[in-house]
Image 1 (cartoon, helix red, strand yellow):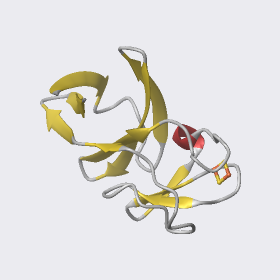
Image 2 (tube, helix red, strand yellow; image 1 turned 30 degrees about the horizontal axis):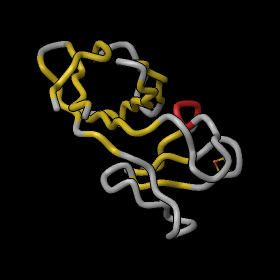
Image 3 (cartoon, protein in one colour; image 1 turned 90 degrees about the vertical axis):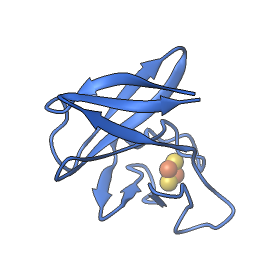
Length: 102
Ligand code: FES
């Protein structure tokens, strides 16, 4: 595991997400505002919706296709407990957003 720079702190408006590809892995990166960022897998496990195109409500992302929400701190689905997404540690270093990619 290693922290890799995936974006600049100014690349994503607060409350929005961006799809990132690193080493063949697709991630969704979100700016929660106040210098907080979250990273998770790019696809919703319900029907593969594009999570980076979803929106944030508190610490959860809402999938744009059918509205399932996922806690970005745990990856737990708040609608269907059988579903979950991978979540990754994020840190800000200067103007870089870095993700601990496994
Ligand atoms: S594909 Fe995400 S809620 Fe259905």
